Length: 220
Length: 276
View (cartoon, rainbow over the protein chains, first blue to last red):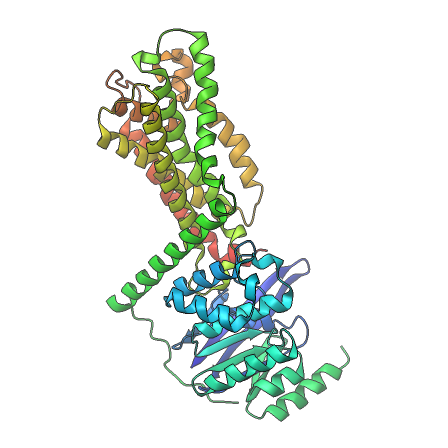
């Protein structure tokens, strides 16, 4: 289970402090995939970075007792001038996984072919996404933190990834950030809305999407 | 809304946790060092050669100048070895500092991984650079020996100890500058121009302290690197006993700098991650 306790986060901007998370406490239920909805700039990516321990909160803490992935995005976490193979090895090493296995799995699953030994910076966004997800699948996480990038690559590859993901649904779940309703509806069991520093979890996905629609159409 | 379960935070520190954290840290630093080696030396075929060429150029220039300027050897020490020891040992201090100072800004991507900390990215660069510098020291001295120059180390352990002081000072400067650099990028220029230049010329790379005019020497001896160079030469050459290098003064500087650097890191690292 992932739990947030009294998490605060604000950023300093030219116009003063901007509160992104205002004393947020929440438990993400075990075995449920949760979508996080929010308007542009609501702080969704910050939230997922805090959950993934990529960034420290100003106060409060995040507790988790499962293997959580790094926040998966298009490129985050990888070194552009190293090849996919070298990046995969790096990930295997820091997670203490078998280097050989992760390398092989990633090569097979990402279908990058000869590009596997080319520097990552020469990849298209779709290819980078494919690589990032393949590496993370190789690592057997219990929680996947996904920042906006699940819709990566062409339709056929998306389907492949979804299949692979479905398979490990039994012991893996997603926390997925998106402002795309479709993505959330397809991948999540429930959803939370992040708005003006507060995070509200709705157990009913439909209710959450309804609320989000109202929010979107609100005059600002 | 789901109800919050209570008592999730188990903040007690146990031996098991500490060991687990240590294992992770070792694993991460190991992976980072390997990665760093790849990015720095792997992409170019001559990448690693450059680490050897740089001090060689410095040494050759000064050897050429001094060989023509005067005939006697500095303090009775063989000229080439004298220069080599000075320049490479200076590198033991300057190179870790240089390569560590951009660590946080250049490794932002890697900090996305929860187990990779700012300490790890700074330290791994320091470790790699220290290893490379020691290799360069050994390799170039051996080459000089093969080339027929006189290379005879009087007290290897003492040399190692003095080299350690260079590294500690360099690591300290590295941590200090790496922690400040994300907030104040200009510390890099300050380091290389305002501090680095004068240090290069005032640290006795190509002279010994007792050849300096006493009033100037008095001031230059505030420079801890000059002390270290004097010490390492005193340990290396049987012809030379330093009258000015002080182990106490040099170590005080080295370890104080390291502590200050680590404290600066502790104070700044949270802000450093956020600053883009």
